[in-house]
Image (cartoon, one colour):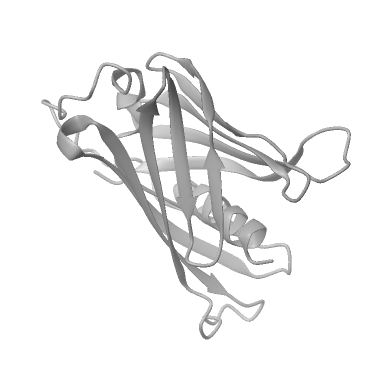
Length: 185
């Protein structure tokens, strides 16, 4: 399955690139878009982010992520692009990929849907600390693993990202990818 490597590589790529590229000297937009009340606590996610890191096979990944308000502030759209390099530092042919995730309120909680063109994850709830952190949860089913995706604000220019999977039959979550991303603008 490409789902786990794809998500892991985006997170790892944004983390390592973040270490290579310090936060932009430009402050965040002074008037961020108005978000629906249920999404307002997630305003800290808005922006353009970048990072990079090592892959499990010894190569590297780098990528960018943009999170913006859509539908009049009724949703947040995360769009990512990741490029993979082999152990030799050269691009892996055909290994770049795009991902999207739509975050939206529904039935009194936040939901999010992830898509990379081959896989989806339906996050059906979220734990939120306003302005500081959010963890999206996708429960395991008899046929699919469970997932947790967390964002924690370190400062105005840095987010800590942690992606975890609960494999079928496993007693607990395992970390798939974890790292920091930095604001590009």
